[in-house]
Image (tube, rainbow, N blue to C red):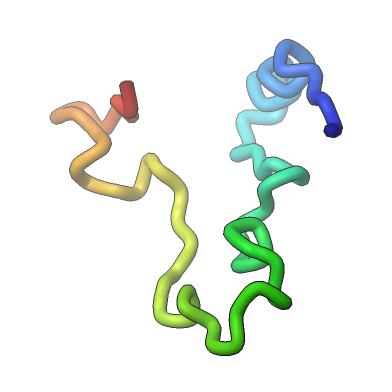
Length: 67
């Protein structure tokens, strides 16, 4: 299993003010299940989006509140 340095990730994001995409869980269907595990693509009708773009996960100020 690959490991990641979360402190370095947070520092990089703070410096660049950019959104981070996890290279171990990229926003593509193969992150959910290997392609050889299905014959039809059950995820084909869905669009990947950041949690901050899901209205029910943000508060009145637009801040993300997942937990």
